[in-house]
Length: 40
Image 1 (cartoon, rainbow, N blue to C red):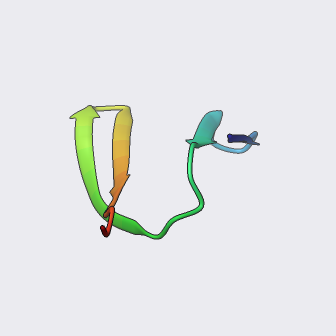
Image 2: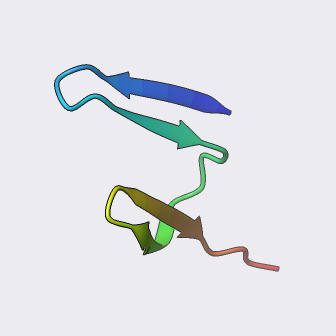
């Protein structure tokens, strides 16, 4: 897991995987969930 903090926007990015992003879902006005596609 990686955590990146952006001081200019006072935001954080939590990365749980290094896989490419497949879809982004808005949880609320300030939170987004980025989902990767698991290929079997």
